[in-house]
Length: 269
Image (cartoon, rainbow, N blue to C red; front, side):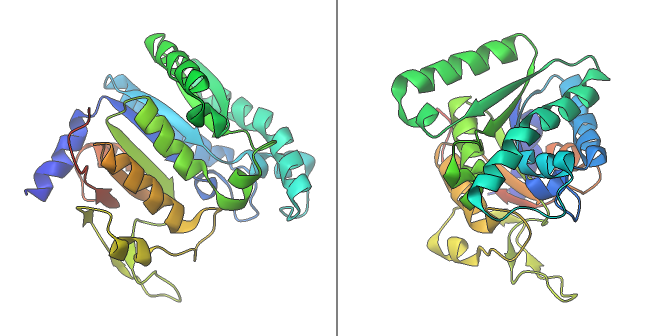
């Protein structure tokens, strides 16, 4: 298989899901960083200008709430995390709306729970609403409803959420942005770079064992690998990359060897 060709084929993706991790839009104090949001909005609009449809799955509500209430540190107890998320959801959308508004780009918020993917009627409603938003040229901004979904806050399940959204929307590509450059053999720490794996042909048990929780963020690499496994089995490639890289989305779409590419295991239905 010509791996470089597989990278170049990413440019043909028309519908792209971009999962933005908490660390990609917050600062070291776990507070929302509007500048980071603005950077990713600018990159999203460059893809839109090329005729791409973009669906954003965004974390960061808790960080936005922490900053809005001016808490000294991120809460640890579940009720406080949920309350911070309740405050932060509006703030997060306000910031997204501000930056997308500079391009006169309408956005929509979609707050989902696990039942939206397990109950057939609700799953159909989700898919129909999403399809209509895309038809109207709106950029959907999806998040799990942190206020009621305990598991999301505890496990960082927005990775799995992005997998469900990718499959349900029949997207052509999932890009997961975090604070690491991809999947490593030996994670970089104490100045060591680690060995970045550029391409994964199939998510095997060995690949899953490479995952680690040793970086900032809820889900760690394990949930990202789990999401990649779900999506690639559905016939859709996945890229995990560092959200702070300059022009990261354009570089992924241009076929540059940035991050880790997980190849689809079969043709998308």
